[in-house]
Figure (cartoon, chains in turn red, yellow):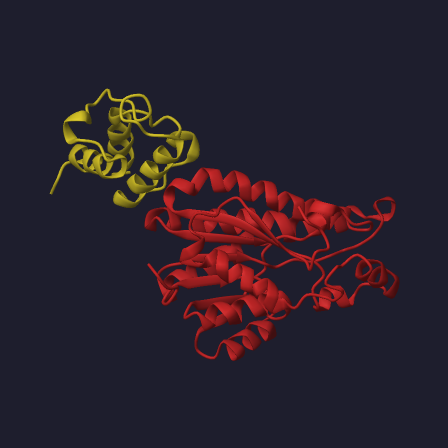
Length: 245
Length: 79
């Protein structure tokens, strides 16, 4: 397999931001993309921008039944799934001393357990076909930490350990499992940062700017490509020099 | 129509890449047929598909030899 033409990808959280850029760039490679959103409106918006190169579907990554329904629809309509991009994620920031149990649970469930759910569900098909790419969107703060984000940082660091363990389990079956760790990217999620937080962050980014969603998508497309077949259990950091690990 | 035993043996030969004469009833997947833990998971998946049944994890763990696979399918395929 020398191109990605005709492969099928599932990208969660694809209605905007990084997920949208990933879905668009995979589609540009000839990949059929199923992009997911939590609302019907979001799913319709995804179908619109994919313009025939796949479709949007509604998915709640914290709901096992919803995951099963979407994967069945993918199987029925496309017959295979080559690439899974676990991108859906949320933040519920607060200092630990003020963090509610719910804010911890929902962030861990949405950002980490969802990856367990989806990866487990797609592996059977990938194992049988002896090919698969699982790419998890983690975060620089999973490595560096960030005050006010104990829940988010724990979930994102968890993705790295998950990916390394699963990578070892399935490497012999032609399946790779990797992470892409964005730094501060110009999305709705970073727009929520306070001015004070932004100034602190900017002072530490050698590139002296926010990253663009397309710059994350480029790393994802590379990991999904045939040329990356020997890279597994790895994290590619895309952060303008903010953290070098 | 092949017998259950023949169908189970065929799957084992395909999944584990072993010779048919090696697939003796007492042969252990891991000790005699060179399977690792993921191979046995895949083998159970293949049995589930061939016989259109779902093998619960606690039962799957007991399927360690050729004969135990044949026995499981024989006892559950016609339920």
